[in-house]
Length: 337
Image (cartoon, rainbow, N blue to C red; front, side):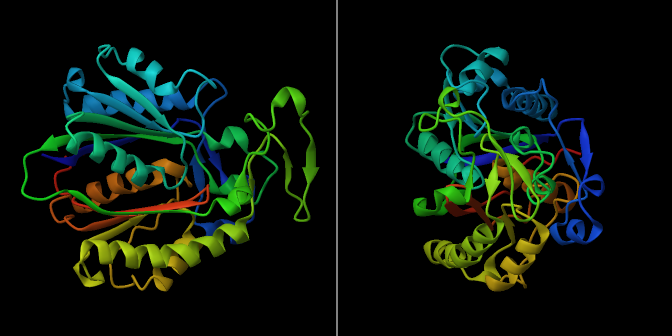
């Protein structure tokens, strides 16, 4: 039995923030983001994930009672404790025999989560897994941080992964990597157990580019993240192809973490993928972190169908710093109009 992705859907909050109200048109064109969906003050990451799960069950007529396990990838749990996936199990009305687990990863999280789901299913520990991603980054980015806020949107995705009797794996050639020495290049300094809020008052500051933020909000060294991506991801592409024993010409599609238009265009060229179909569009969503890969998969399936997506390279990279890639057969995904 092998793990196979059967359905994917996304849920984006109703509230929209336009980048034309924040930055000039030149920067907006460079990053490729015109608008983003923004969670309201009373919408949590758990709320968005729950909505994505309900939408997945409704659109695909899935038997929710068949769920064996819920994986939730988020860096924004509803509470420090308990883990948010447990609460979602209850909200979905699922039985107590359902396992639950949060994965605290960002931009690389979807590929890592697929590896976890594959491990559970192919070891016989589960047969049907509900894999959720949810991000509410904008709650942690100051509205006056005009180098970071225009990039990020909020949203959640739901992926249904189940055991199938097949002659080869649908998820394969996984490659992982980390560079924890650069952990501070994308970080929220205060809020964890190292710097507790009660011991570290909120302090606001303006950087040399006039971006305004506090030590409770996201700091991103954009140049360092760009260099990291262009240094590590082309090698990741080579390593995944080697593991899969494939050439670039044999790939049906590349669906990578959607960081921004400029970076993705440059990355595609540097990784020698100009002749491979390559998704690069976050015009109305922005970067929704761990949800960007499944959101892109949903968009590609809706526009091109899934039947010819048998050798798709998936890749995520970012906060950690971390990266991961794999080859996925997406031909079994239901195309919901």
